[in-house]
Length: 171
Image (cartoon, rainbow, N blue to C red; front, side, top):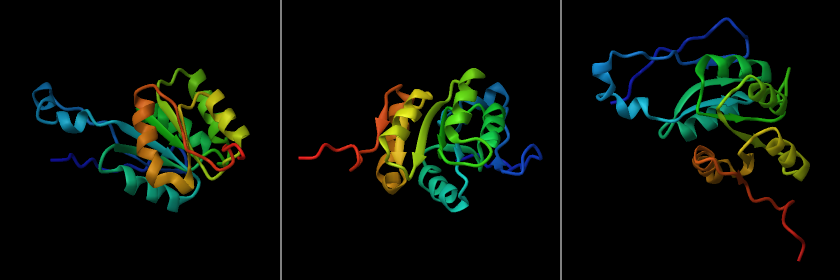
């Protein structure tokens, strides 16, 4: 049985779509709810609502999606509120880019594993993402085939980069 948390729309930022409140249960419930409490928590950031919906749909059966946001500043605020295990973020977002937001999160001591999700296959973007501290880089065309694998690898502390035609060596 899955716990149904009431969705909260905080006033902190207009670009925070939703954040699930922390659920605090008495100790006697921890064993009964261990399947819910042990799920990996994920915070999503993308400035396109349709993409957020696709990613939520893809991940919600396996992971606990604790929030969705639409810009870099909201990502920083939501990460502080939810303390997710994994952040899946677009690179190109308003206010702060995903890379700028992740750098700031790292400076603030965030322990979240980061995976960037981008349409861009440019090796410079991939390098910048990994230098910013990301463990994964998934291209949006490979969302369905690569994102869950990238999350699994990130949780294990390993890197994952979607295969790309731009990275392949000419024959």
